Amino acid sequence: MIPNYLKSAARNLLRDKTNALISIVGLAIGIACCMLIGIYIRDELSYNRFNNGIKEIYRVNWITKDNNGINTGASTPVPFSQNLQAKIPDIDKIARLYQRSGEMESDDPVGAGKQRFQEQGIYFADNDFFNIFVNHFQEGDPNSALASPNAVVITEEMGHKYFGTDNPLGKTLLYENKWPLKITGVVEKMPLSSDIKFDFLISFETVFSVETPAFAEFVRNDWTFTPCETWIRLKPVGNVQKTELALKRHLHENGSERNHEMNTVRLQPLTDIH
Image (cartoon, rainbow, N blue to C red; front, side, top):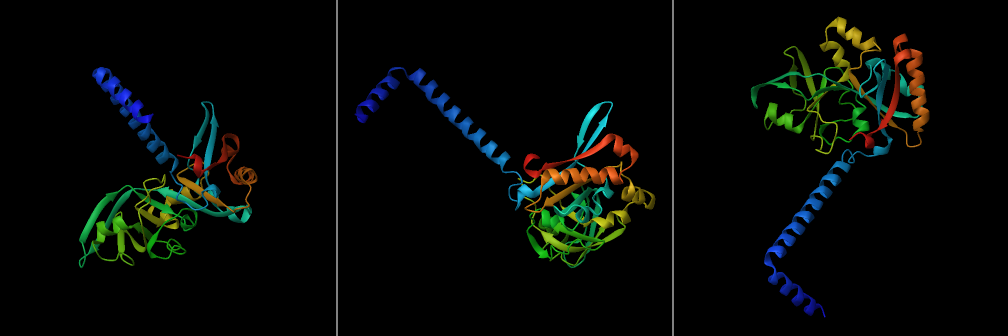
């Protein structure tokens, strides 16, 4: 039976070759397009999924209400996260990310020699960043890599860029031609399927040294300037709604009068960000 169907199909194709060719090419293009769409969707849905316990990871979004409507931002004031773990039991870990591009320089006469580049992927981060997101350390201790001022964790790619084949751990990078940073860790570059990417992570307290004294004091204490992302990991039994209400109460109790009138916060799951 099947051979007869195949013979009949072959005769029909040969009888009208032009229509047959158009149909086959159209079918092939349609299948290829469906496959490409499927691959694209699968790639988009894979973003950030490499993180362990991804369902417990949230970003604190900053909501501003004014005459123009309601605006949602991904960054918060620096002092917002102070003492949050002590105040809100459901928060397991909390970390801030503060981007500040600048010049990096190494002077390694034994290895790659003096290397100086303007870098964009520079962030200041709290040490609990490594307890929220998955980072594969090749050198250093993730529990203490960013615990001290003037410490920096770099990617393996940056290690090769500045120090060649030498082990970068323990070496020094000069930031903005002024501040020496000790390399306390080397990690693999974040996957392409990550919304968070960096080349350098500097201990967060260092940001108050590299900024001018007046601006550092402003950043440290002001509740209206929002330069950093705030990420939290809830405990597995943590309640999202309860935590969000506690964060709003924290803002109301500690923020400025302008915050009380214009701002609130909302927790956004990492799974919903991309």
